[in-house]
Length: 401
Ligand code: ASP
Ligand code: MG
Image 1 (spheres, rainbow, N blue to C red):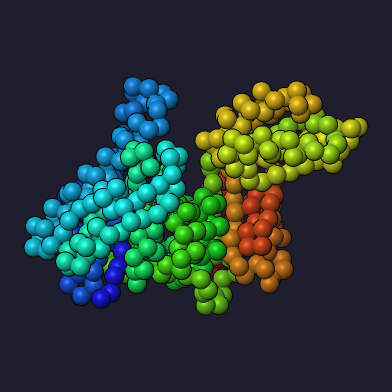
Image 2: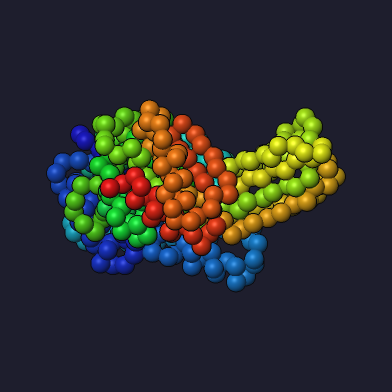
């Protein structure tokens, strides 16, 4: 029998009417003869509201208790959805992350899935039940509840699809697929019929919010048949797979990431081991560094600038300040008023002139580029934050016509 994993995000289950709508999608699939596992997120803004509640008590609450709190959001959704499906006359059972067998490491608030023991879940499927699973949560080896990081329900769904060798993993959301740019900012953005895992991974890591980047990583690793589609409109979405058909689009997407901060270290000693020292200090604190720029040495000193995610820049500044005597007592300059614009597409590997076309579009719009970085299938630039939406539009127009 066919097995389909369907994931529904927060907006798709935001209220009773939406929950009934989701129940209809699930039972339609079931009625056509497939087994269905549904993975759900917390309703609407529940997770944000719970975070706000916690902060009313403590600005810096324990991460274990935070996971305890946030996991309740998904637990509400699974119970309500199971009730809706049952009311429609179908056999159904809801399972928490733990009951569904999600075992993770102990990195509270950012846990990684170690394994999924699907024995119980498969027993329920064997009885032809629809199984509704709480996304985003698992359990560590001390029996404590963990969560997978914001947006983590996508990863729960893909992990289950991989473990159960599902025929298809459908991510239902409030947009009808993956677009070349955020259509709320770029009205002329186009929906993609398909995109490769690598391209989707770059886009997800560059600020495109459709999919949690770890879910794409996992889908690629286990070759999960993945599809993004709308729960509100019945039309085909975007397929994400290993190789895609040749398309006329040179790039698949333009993404904006507002959650970056530039840190510059000015007046570093110009001798071997300096970059090593800096980036090993950051790595030891598990701080991800993105664009890196080093100036040419002059008069025995040099500068290094790099970007970090906004939620780790304070930790970065803290460790660099603590160790300033080890890095020539350099000046530490922080700029939070920046944004990163990236273009992604495997087509750029074989087509010269992609970078220049991007830079031309920015220059014509009078947007100054402050940093640049490239990979095989991606070009990113750092610009002033207030120019972000404009940049997204002009770069998009240069490629997507
Ligand atoms: N409810 C969690 C969040 O808002 C997980 C998810 O929606 O995927 O981040
Ligand atoms: Mg999401």
